[in-house]
View 1: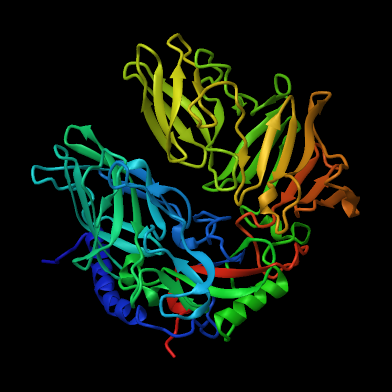
View 2: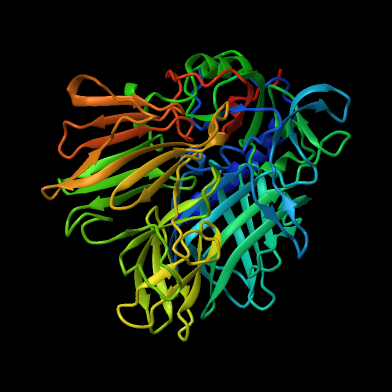
Amino acid sequence: MEFQISFTKRVFFIVVLVGLVSMVVFLALTQPTGDVVRTAGQKITNTIAITGVNVGESIGKEFPALTESHLLGLATTTEQTNEGRTQVKQYIRLHGGTSQTHDGDLNQMTGGTIVFERNEQGKVGDFLKFDGDEDMFEYEIEFSSGFKSVYNSNHMLVDLKEETLNLLGGQFAILEAKVDTSSHWIEIKMIGPGGTVELKDLDYTDIYYTDHGLKFNGKDIQARVMIRGHDLGNNKFSITSIKYRPQPMAKGAGKHVYVEPKHGVQEYLREPQMMLTPEFEIIYGGLSGGPAPAVVADVTGAVSTEISEGLAELINAEGPTGNMITGAASASGNMVWFKPTGDDQYDLIASTNIANYKIGLASTRGGLHWGDEDQNFVFTESANAGVFNINQRDYFMVSSGTDIGDYTSIIMYENILTSQNKIQYRDLAGGSKQAAYDPATGYGQIVLNGRPTDFYVSLASPYPITVDLTQDGNINGARAEWVLRGGPRLRFSGAGTVAIIAPRRLFHEAPAGDETTTFTIGQSGGDITLTVANQATLTLRSAEGGVRYGLTPFGFEFEWNDHKEPEELRIGMPGAGIARPFQSQPSYGAQAGSYVVVTLERSKLAKKK
């Protein structure tokens, strides 16, 4: 008789074995390493450098959230259980927001800050400082359609056992998951690259974190955990998100964690396991004369010198952002592309701080309008909650604000289930959800950009809706703006006016106000057109092939092909979060700044002396 083991169990046992071996490696890697160096000849593809961070600034000020666009280990995956399929999205937040364990307990997250001061051992210099009174960073796992399972009489979520999740660049196998739908506690136990990770939330229905919600290899870690989920009925449960926030504890004497130049934060933590995997590291490169804040992604040059010298040399000599005209803007997320589709529509390809989008922006089918040939694109609220301006299959823009760290999502109103008093909606970047409304008033809330958002449904067929697009608690005709990755914005208005805006505080040396550059989408004989004119911020110059190029003071690189029918426009985005190294860029000044490396491949960077 041949003994067989299922494929799922074989994978599970392999992950467990790898995890046990990695525990030993983790203990070695998290000891003091001395200077952080690059291993000669190794290729670094899961590492970014955030440059141009000034003294007194948070490393997450300009780039509060890191996504799969920045680190390959944060890639979105799809998981399937017996109860359904879901996308699994990951984010590392370096700055912003608060956590609460109870009413009145507000814990800020400034994140790591560059300081020049005396540390608690009396050494004066520049450091990357993590305040002992604040959350260190936030790691979020979002299950777009819910991570679903049946639960039994022993509280076990039976469908989640032996499932594996690709998190932070490593595999985590679920050993067990338990939920109590009466008292609302939930626990998840996994084994990953560094050992066993146990996450617990005392109430999955509230917005509070559970203090000491993490155990690593059975040891309590000073960290806050929030696991959100809901009972689906019929002994089925859905986990919607997991948020994890560690509080830094210094290894030596003192309250705060001070990371010296060319060193990683794990070296200074009493419990480096709070990074969840030995490969997740934040390295302080030190101060240097630098360009405007930017992120360098996919650093690939093989350099045998110390990272503080080798990587900094690449950044400062070659420039941290790509030059669109020389081809770098083709990198995903480093460009805003107004792409003609046929002769009657423009698609917009652009990124937000949390996602990449491709939408039908404007069409002349049925007259010039925002949207595609069949649906409208809505970015302005109706006059009040009693006026409905979004029909089924229309898509709308929701922004949490207009600051550089705010979030924008593009959502489609897919369907209404009147028998259940629910609407169905879909994020055009992926993932569908439902939201309930009151059958008497039509009022409901949907969670968008991580926050509850008011909407109203017309109670008469065909059931259009209106939504608080600016997420300010009011529906009053306000206009949402598209916050691009890194902080610039797109503003749409009128019959076809588009403005791209560089906020004042993104400049290395801030001007008197924001930089605004406009262009127009129109129609001629039923064909769609796009026109860019010279203006105070932009002078276009012709090149071969009928292409005109221009550069704004902030560094937006315009490539307008007005010899194509329809015309095509691409705008390169300096410092917008995705950039290629080894390309030139305009100088924004020489103000002293620092750089910080965030990596999910620490073993390629850290080496004992």
